[in-house]
Structure formats: C-alpha cells, structure tokens
Image (tube, rainbow over all chains, first blue to last red; front, side, top):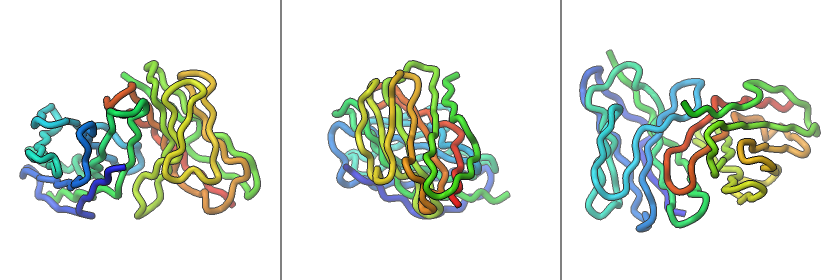
Length: 112
Length: 112
C-alpha cells in the first residue's frame, strides 16, 4: 500500500494561512488523496479530498502537485479551533473496500 | 447527518475476558472499518469490511476478529483480551470507492 509522510508538528499564528505538506511518492493512478483532522477526544473528521486537480471547500483547499507525489492542505486563516492532528491518507479506488491506512499525522498548534 | 455510533465510550475489562465492540452506521454504507489509536502511533487499521459477511485483514489483525451480519453493524471481537490491547478503538464507515470516511467518537478500552 502507498504510504504518506507528514511532518510531526507545525505551528501557526491565529488568522494566518497554514500550509500542511504531505508526501506520497509511491501513489498509484487509482489513489485519491484524502485529508482528515482529529480534535482532542474526538474521532477524525473529513476535511477534503482530490485526485488530480486542486480542490476547494468551505473548510480548506487542497493543492496537488502535477506529478501527484505530494500535496498541501491549505487553511486560509487559522483559528484556535483548527488546532488538531491532520492526517493525509490515500484511498485506493481499485478495490472494493478502498482500504485506508493512516500515518502519524501532523499536530498543528495555533498561537493566539 | 451521517451517524456512526459506537456502543461504549469507555470499557474496563480483565485479562482473558471476551470483549465485543459494536459499531452501527445509519447511512447504508458498504464499507466499514475498525482502527486502533495509540499515542505516537497514529491510527492503525485492524479489519475492514466491504459488504455483509465480507471482511479483510488490515495492518494489525492479530488478536482480533470481526463480524458483519447486517450492513449497518460491524463488530470487533477480542476473544481473550490482553493488556496490550488497551487502546482507543475507532470505527468508520464510507460508501464504496473513495468517498469520505465517517468516524465514531471512539471506544476507550482498558484491559487490567
């Protein structure tokens, strides 16, 4: 299974943009890139996903490199509520289950 | 809203006991997953299911089994609990393919 690599931790100031990187050099053509975040004492929640093109939604933007070997989750204006662990995962469209393996994620700290 | 409900938020069991963790989803999702989460290790996939009575091993299936007799319910079974199975257990569900995953709030199991 293709794996993802993320920095262990990042810091941001409140109301500034945050760029969270993810490397997935062994991504296959049928893998979708998903991002989830986990707040303390909660299960992970979906943030965004994409295949090749950049994606935007109300929570964030996802920028995908042309070769698809890396991606960046962009939070346009960080708030204190965005402090969480962010996971980048790959979901394989080539199997029935879309098996999903999570890595260690990036712990985002937002400073007021 | 999609809801994934895990039967118990907190459980305390003794070594050697049989433990059942139940997960129910209300959105007719084909795919269901069980993860465990330990400090510093992220989320690790135990088992997943892509249809009723169908199951596939994840990355750490040893010591666990699963049951999916109905589409909405996915059970994780510890036949003989051990102290190294003390952990947070997270259930997730999703549509077939690569749509977003929905997580429950987690079940924190302590084995004494």
